[in-house]
Every structure is written in C-alpha cells, then in structure tokens.
Length: 455
Ligand code: TRP
Image 1 (cartoon, rainbow, N blue to C red):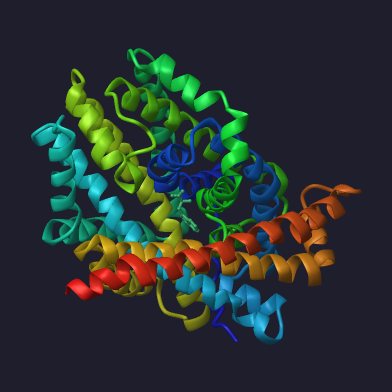
Image 2: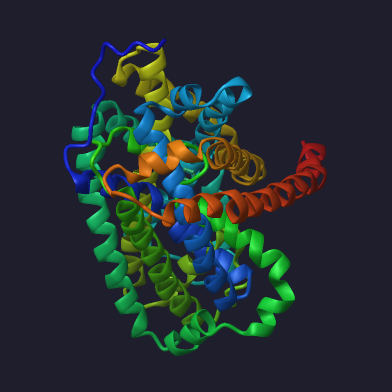
C-alpha cells in the first residue's frame, strides 16, 4: 500500500489546473517541433491532417487520462495498479520510464534555447547560413550544452520541489500568459515582413495533390505530433487530474486546453514561415535544427533581429520550462505517493538522475536522437496504446461514469467517446507504433551504427 499519511495536494483554483495543463502541452513540441514537421511534410496538408487528429484522436485520449487520474487520485503507477489487474498494473512503469527519458534530452534542447537567448543579447545572430550551422553544432554539444542543460534542470527541480499550489500553479500562472502575449506579438510583427504573403499561402492553402501523394508519411507524423503536443501517452494528464476536485467538467477543461495548445502551434507557424520566406529559406530544408539554424540566421538578417530573436528564444525557454515541470512531476508524484519520500528530496534526486541521463544527449547529437526517437516513437506510443486498450475495452463503464461527474448524463455521447477510443485512437497508435519501431531499427543500423564505428 502507499503511504497516504501526507494529505494529497490539490490545485487551488480551476485556472490553476487549466494553466498547468496548457503549460505542459505548450512547449518545444509547438514551437520547435511543429514548424519543422510542417516544413518536412509539405506545408498546409500537414496542418490540416494535424488539426483533424487533434480532434479525433487527441481529445478522446486526453479525456481517458483525465478520468483515470481523477478517479484514482494517484500517480500513474498507483492509478494503473488500482484500475488494472495482471500485467496491466505495470503500464504505469512505462509512463515513468518515458518521463525519465524524455526529460533527460528535453532539458538539453531547452538548454540550447537559453543559450540562444543569451546569444542574441550578447553578440546577435549570424546571418550566413553555413556559419550559423557551424555555430549551432558547436553550441549544441559539449561543455556548453552540458552547462545549460544543468541550469535548465535546476530550474525545473526548484519549481517541482516547492509543490503543486505554490510551485507549479504559481509558475504557470505567470508563464502561460507571457507565452500567449509574446507569440501573438511576434506573429503581428511577422505579418509586416515582405515574405509574409508567400508564407501564408504555403502554410494555409492545402494542395490536395501533395496530400494524396504523401499521406503515408503525413498521417503518422501528424498523429505522433498530435499526441506529443498534447502531452499524452505518459501519464502527465493522469497526474495533473489527480490533483483535481470532483465537480469539474472534464470535457470542457479538455477542450479549453486543446484550444490553447493548438492556437499556440498555429500562431507559431505564422511567426516562423514569414521569417523563413523573407530570408529566402526553403521551409523543407531545416529539419530538427530549424529554429536554431535557419530561423536564427534569418534573425541575423533582420533589423533588430537580435532583440526579436532573443524574445523568441526566451519564450521558447519558458514554454519548455512549463512542459518540463509536468514531465518531472509524473516521476516525483510516484516517488512521493508510493515511497513516502518528501517532495524536495524526490525532486532533487530525480532531477539529478535525469540530468545525468541527459549528459550523453548533450555530448553528441546522435545520442540525442537515440533517446528522442526511442522515447517519442516507441515508449510514448506504446504506453498510450496500452492505456487506451485497457480503458476503452475493459473499463468503459467506469470511464463514462467518471466523465459524467461534473457534467451530468452524457447520453449517447458516452458510447461515442468510448468507440472513438476503441477504434480510431487505438488504430492510429498501433500504426504509429509499427512505423516507429521500423524507423528506430533503421536509425540503429544506419546513423547510430556509423557513429559507433567512428568512435
Ligand atoms: N507537450 C509538450 C510539448 O509540446 C511536451 C511534453 C510535456 C510531453 N509533457 C509531455 C510530451 C508528456 C509527451 C508526453 O513540448
């Protein structure tokens, strides 16, 4: 049994929970990953598919995590032990492992965003693309990267150590409004750039031919992105909902959270593409270095680009911080609930271990990929898939019953939700898992094997 002598913490206010969930959802996934996915997958067609998956896959899956968290009032491991039997009890462990791995390298990438904020303020950005790339390679790995990884992780530990109400809730109430205001401001600025018109048509008018030709790659990429950006698949929303009171309308809260997350991703596109088009960069080129190479070089080209760039990277760093606290909170809540260790001790211990696990990612980009692909494409999808199978197929009554608390009788919407989980959500996750494993195999036998050979 867990040691429940410490009374369980709760959100002080309704906005506290919503801001924390929005803060978790809005992060590197929106500002760093989303634009380069749009770029790689051909623009507006990807955007359209992504929006579709947010509604059809993301929303039902988020509600599943919410009901499990609120019903059990436990961390993901405890929650799964309570609702599952047999091997299902161990699904919570996958969540903990995923959180561990994701935060280890997420913190490295977040460290780059702090480094790039300082870079703008100190020296400005380099306009020459090749040189900007060289600079990124230097800053992204090695001592510099390890130092900023440490700084970022220390900030996450500090917030999580303080607790739900005075740590996480207070921090997100400042950070989330700041992110929203600054992204809107930057999008307005980007609208004044000469490349804006061309960028909008690329981003906003889907070419059906491009979708038809590339759906095999667009579909899994859009589904994966929908899951990642909403922080689904590793128990964040279980954990955050476990700190809720009983009488909330979870469907409404979920819709608000999804609305914010999707808007921020959408607006980020309205910032990034006008800047890239103005600088003459093909949005398909940049890949994972997109905002640190092409966008940074574009900032180097603009009047006052150093300042706009520093504001942009600073905002990304804040968004990453509010996501990172949710990743750490999953593991910390487990340690507190099941092991009875105090919150500050748990935060320092877990944060320290996550820092160490992240050091290889800060040492070489190939190792960062090794962790990133494994967590994102395999662990995250696997954990999410198992949870959806368990709740959708064996606990539908419990799920509908819990969702109705705070809403009232759902009528036929209850079964509609359960069937959305049973068929489309599970199918998409299954396809994503198979493709993810194949992709990982290719990575291990390709780039990774080469890297090992070079050592
Ligand atoms: N959603 C966050 C982003 O978009 C990242 C994130 C935080 C996450 N917690 C998560 C992703 C849990 C998957 C699972 O950057």
